[in-house]
Length: 86
Image (cartoon, rainbow, N blue to C red; front, side, top):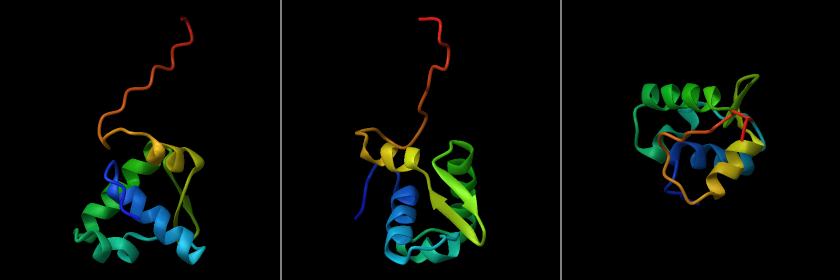
C-alpha cells in the first residue's frame, strides 16, 4: 500500500508487516527506486523522530510511525509544541 505522506516509512511498515521481521534499507530500496544510501539516511531521520526504532538486524516501525501514516499530512517539517504551558 503506497502512502504519499512518507514513502520510506510506508514501505518499511508494509515490509515489516508482510515479513514479521526487521527491515533494512537494502530490503526496500528497489521498491522505492531510490539509492540505498538515501534510504539509510531517511531511516536515521525517522529514528530521530521516533517513527522507526532500531532493532537487531534492522528497524521496526513504531506505533507513532504507524499513526503518522494515518494523518493527512506531508512528510516534511512537522512542528510539535512540547511546551505544556497552554
